[in-house]
Length: 119
Length: 319
Image (cartoon, rainbow over all chains, first blue to last red; front, side, top):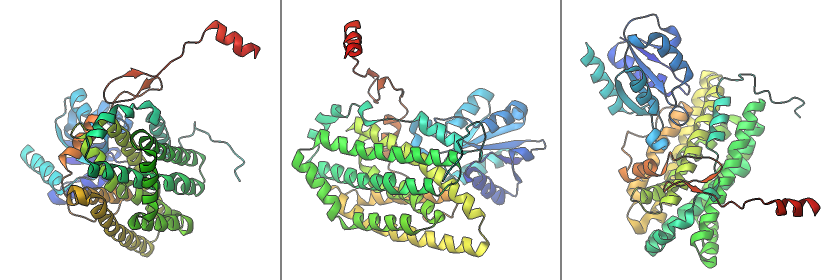
């Protein structure tokens, strides 16, 4: 499994890299994707929008994406990390976690357990 | 002096336009929220609760005033790019909208003498004065990177001792229209902190390693100094309500978000935010916003409209 991230401020990238270091898995930006099972890590912008770059990626590769992690900011209340729920609903991809900014240790553990459970 | 115009057809740095459009989409004014509908809730608060609410709002007013008058305008002046300047100038405008909304709340809920007391309290509160003096100096004497660090620290971390109480009450269904005002302000500050953090990250990444280490150390020292100051402020403002430890936890949580915005190591261990505060944000945020309605969590009331008649047009035309 590859950890594929779409990151604007670096938060999603940092989370993906920490996860990669824990699990010994590769982490890479969307543009580097070369096929195979992927966990998509992306962010939320505005009132819960999915980034255009993530949408473009999903239009092409959604069938290879096993799960999605969405970063967001708790300040948005009901729309916090909404991109994750939108992706789950539109593409039928399991939502693994919604994380605040670059996520907590508990978030890392939860996503790690999910990945381990996939094998 | 600039001799060119802003071209919004150019992608620019690839992110500024998105922030400009987002700030435009969440534009709001205090008149659009029926804060007077909280009057019965206000009267039901105890004197200690009212005092805490008044003081946190007064403190935030002072900080937003500093951001609107000094912080954001200097950040805008320090950028070359027209799109960036426009974005930061709009942020500055919103800081002034925030400051005005605190003042409008005073006008709505306080007597003239209580209002005067609140403004006098600001000038006598040592932690607040220390914060204002220090950050004004960082803005006026610091380089661009220092200004960005200061701005992000203020808006992402140092406002949160103040935001706690109104959100905590809104999470219990009290003062919920004012709760929406605070949620709107939080959303603006979250946007500003993310954007200014990105500008910081860009400059930081261009520095050689030894200078990065120096900036990192300077940030940590500044953050620790003003975390302590925030704790002193919290002890004073929240003492009567027994909430100080919950507030400090919320402040630490937001300091970590500030670190995330700047792309630097987090300073504090993970903690959970008080669920009532989260509930306050969840229940008062995300309502429909447009220019023709009064914004409010409670509904969708049309703003007062006076129909234009032919007679009125003729009168205006002839005048």
